[in-house]
Image (cartoon, rainbow, N blue to C red; front, side, top):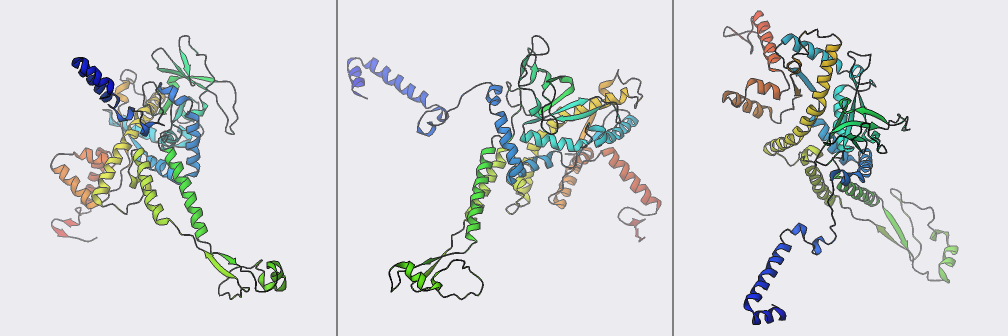
Length: 487
């Protein structure tokens, strides 16, 4: 207690006790959250609150430009981007139609496979559908998002194709909405419920020159693929934004280490001269004997060279820091991978410190991260594209189903199957699958889906192989009626 507290306590113990109690409560409230305190640890931490769009609007272009620079020049940035792309789309995602009509399923799957070719699905005829999906994952990670525009053309398999647009093409200068009562925010037109109803584009040509006036497209024709992390967010921000500063620091560090190693690999020698025993000054000694001049001299293998009188050689051999760099880079790469929800191993491809158990656990955790991206791809892009494709096929008369419009939802029933991943230990994985099947923890349908196959097609293939083997008098495994045969 200070002097005032003691005086108050002496005159009125009750008031003095209340004074001390309120002071203690204020002290506790001040330190309820260390993150909210203003002590010396947080003295330079200045943050503010605002809506999602206001927080992103003024830094969105700068962040995008910096991440694109790292995409072009940073191997670590590309390691994270490539890890996300190959583990989400990978070898491709296959359609399986799930209606009650097997003939319709087979026809829809065949037409979809044909439409996914570059000349049928891409208005520029430069990418097939899986390639467009890979680019979508990459652009969302770098730019923050990508835009697909539905184009209804007269050429191709069906009158429907896709055009990919960059988020840069959203017109920021457009402020007047097309419909009264709406508002335009960063090129996107919203209604009173903050639902996107249209998009304004400032289209530019392939050489980067802006062409024409802003164009408006209804939201039904636009697929905007980006990560929405706040309710008030209306536009994209790069997925690499939390990691970009660390990637930049590591790149700068590696440049410095590389320069240091290049210097360390060079042998530098300096001649130390003492004053000569005769004459006045070094100039007179150098003039008296040309051997004292070392201009143009260089080191060579097996060289024998006589120095001038009183001269000495000192070799510069800077140390290297490759050992320290390795541990530093591993730590930084672990942090960067963790910031993107991935493991160090899947980003660095370094498996030197893993065993089966740790690799399996890391794979499970990575799959949980990639599953979110796959879910977003399927629901935002692939489902929308497939449903539009089916409608275009019906309009074109390729199906000829009489009750298509009455039962449109049932005809659009489908699922997506990703390409299977290779096993870490095939024997252990196969044994685990067998146990799961025997204990009814998994069905044959589940196992086929994990392997990227349709369970009905798998059974048909098995039956076809068994029937052909039986026609040749051979059972699978090489036994026929209990006897071994060779063919």
